[in-house]
Image (tube, rainbow, N blue to C red):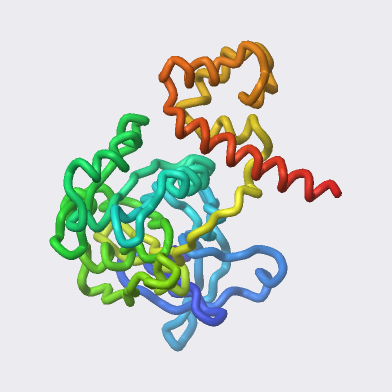
Length: 293
């Protein structure tokens, strides 16, 4: 039975791609209310006389990203803009929580490099390189970073995510002009971009690589994080130090002998990262309190 990867879902139909061609298939009735077929899934299908297909079985997934729902993903590329709109580090750290929670490889792309100088770029992005993240500077307008970005996403499945208006679709058009993805301007009134991506779709970058342009959003709720311990694990610069805290359930706020706060005092952890941690912790604990009211 032939196998194919779901590259898009349209009105109850699924476009499947294998090594030879792309076909449109529908799901066998047994899937209704039982299993959900996601973009990125590998499936077995049977052929129909009209050249279409019927999905018979979903093959085992290696993972499932839930924001957005995409199966069998290998890495996340988080895209931010250096200017127009500005992306504060608090927003960057919020997106990093999502990426860290996925367990996937993470690449940070800072777009619109043509609007800033090297000093401004390093002031915003440099600290993240110091934390161990791969950082790429790009400009869809000048083609800066095109080859570096293309090499980074040439294999397997990459999810592109980030706030609206930072140029995700423009970057994809830079990598492959044939995509002709719709792009939008940044609103002067609200200071952020308008959504231009409407659905989840695997876009072929190379014969062996796909990328997913996801709908942009400016705020990410933290309801997927379970308390202080869960939050600490999503801060790689905190996690190893937290092992030396006096209390196993240390929240790293006022507890005595807290190794994380000690690291902040000794400048082994950036103070602004710790401030963001406290803001996120307060938000998470407020969400949890609301659940139990």
